[in-house]
Length: 228
Image 1 (cartoon, rainbow, N blue to C red):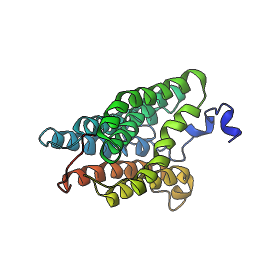
Image 2 (cartoon, rainbow, N blue to C red):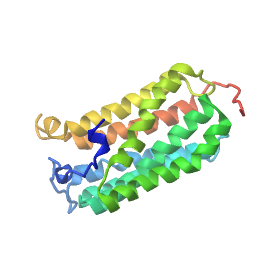
Image 3 (tube, rainbow, N blue to C red):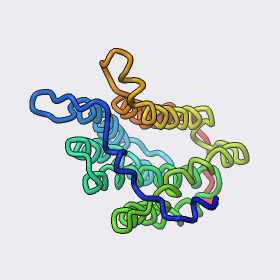
Image 4 (cartoon, rainbow, N blue to C red):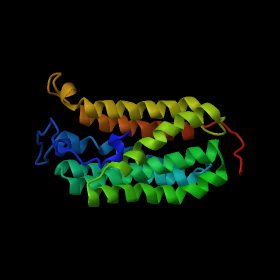
């Protein structure tokens, strides 16, 4: 707790990924190209949402816009990894985090509260990235990224499902955790034959989380959604 009261600077070693192999003129090719699943999942979901009336639809649209832009922003970052390019990776991710959390609050806690929080949470997410970029202090960004992930299990345990099944949300969180583990295991995974790195697989796992959200929305059970 005391360490969190002190500014948390971005470690320069964060940008030093183990797999820097180029391919067809693309630097860091596999870390760049492994972002394609974000774009595929995001665009497929947006196309589906354009035809489907689902509860909290605007929040899910923003969530999948964030997923799509993460594909482009992360590819841009991995082309030339620096703090300046990392901004465009983190911005759309925070949009997706906040939209997901708002939708969950709207469904499980209160539709009114979820809608009231939606825009302020998006602004907080975007501001956290801007604050880090200006001050080199990651504390607010860490709160935005991990705060909702700590609150979501509490919400799942105490509030009943009205639309999305609890097991589907747990699976989404599982893919997110897998992505964070693979991110930390970048070099270890690459050491197994030098075929693919942990960071490249992280992109696939994170995209799988978005794909599971789409699957869950498409396989939803009909239920009344409270306007309270």
